Amino acid sequence: MTDTASVRALILDARRRFEAAGLPEPASDARILVGGIAGLTSTQLLVDGDRVLDTTIAASVEQGFLRRLAREPIHRILGAREFYGLELGLSAETLEPRPDTEVLVDAMLPHVVRIAGEKGRASILDLGTGTGAIALALLHECGQAQAVGVDISEDALSTAARNAERLGLASRFETRAGPWFVRVPERFDIIVSNPPYIRSAVMVDLEPEVLKYDPHRALDGGPDGLEAYRAIADEAASHLLERGLVGVEIGFDQRDEVVQVFGEKDFLLLEERKDLGGRDRVLVFTHNRR
Image 1 (cartoon, rainbow, N blue to C red):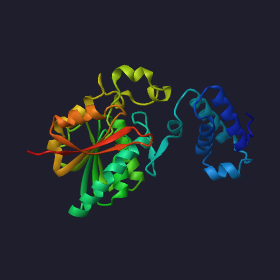
Image 2: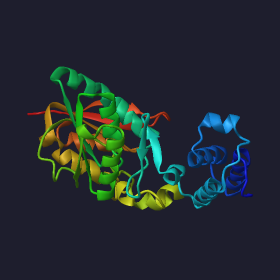
Image 3: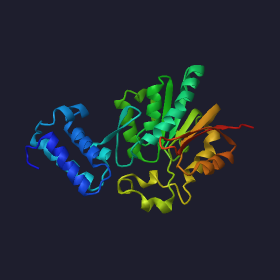
Image 4: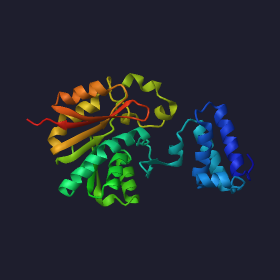
């Protein structure tokens, strides 16, 4: 492209290049990249397509195109992704928060609100917090909730803390280094997690956007994909307040196995939810205290 390319011309150029490279969504990728890097809304892209970008911005757009052609995900290039209406910053050791995980927030939010209404507050533990997506979405929706986000990655914890600060939620969000419950002595009303659940043997079959750019230790759930669920189920009961709940995201084919893992630790399945594709996605457990 020339140094004086218009917004419309840049989008068309990107679309052609992305199509030629076999990227799955070339048109939307082109629009999102140009808009995100140039700081233009979707409406501005439509009505102001003849705008000529200055050479510095045009160069940044071109670098974004090259990164996408190398299969780097759109939102990693832009450095942020929206989740539950919140813009969350990303970093090298955080997963991109995805729409499927919003199902976990949808499932747990009514319980958080109910508990806060009954007790005046609700405490949340988010295991493997990453960007802080799940905890911060719940805090944003319930002003009486407080959360602790745990992760084994210091990079992820720093990212989550920055997200909380930017969203005005830092006073109700605390980060701690993992793994799991090692630095968490207290009990909570709600424990949530989107843990690693992909079987080790199929990691090599993941799309390049995931395999090359997502942190593997946030994806690899061990030989059977269940290691994280066992770790959570082993100790969750001793970290739950009375009538507390555990909510977890699962792989589409793991429902029965995860129910068994928690059942062996005296947890009862209270609720289950499917994602927008109709696949099993979220399980909510209560503990059968003896």
